Length: 221
Image 1 (cartoon, one colour):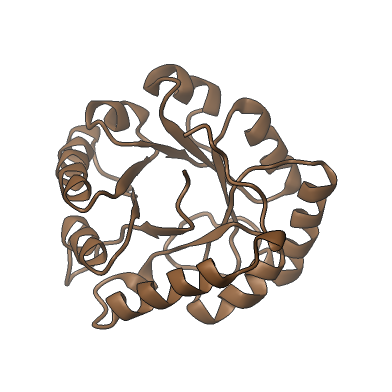
Image 2 (cartoon, rainbow, N blue to C red; image 1 turned 90 degrees about the horizontal axis):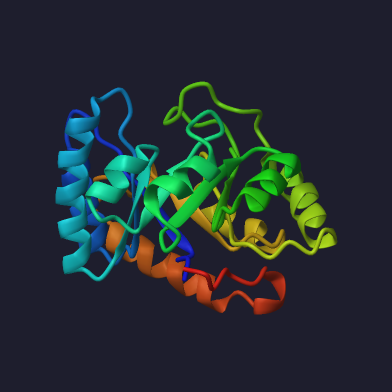
């Protein structure tokens, strides 16, 4: 089952990826994406193994951004691939049929192609500008989500779609009305004193959302 609240790891001068992940896990996070850029693969592997050990303690899932071989070697639950990363088909060959693959999409065509290639969930965005990611794709905004999610319904595509990119908690009610399944957050949950309260509130809001507004989550994972 794909969780409806994703944390994308972030580090800064005050906190490391592992420290940030541990804080979110203690606060109730159940889905962690380790996103490390501009580091050698062996360094990412060491982080992934440590992150997976942490996630196991909290019965949470770990997804590795890019680096499918790291995902396999660390025994993570899966891999998330960007538009310019290794293909979904090749990722599947590397990590196996029983692992989760998430894919980034910015357009309906991106989403459609990812579904055809075998993705288990979609990270659709960015919602608004975010400094977390370089080479940002065109901003979608709320109208962009409405349009794409309508196309998804018309095409009878049933896959969890996760909103991503500069999202704040106040955006959630309007985003859920578009039909998205969940959301991904990064900086808003990183090294904050009220992370536990925020995660609890977000899960409650997600659970209270009527299922008629949601696409059916994939059961293949």
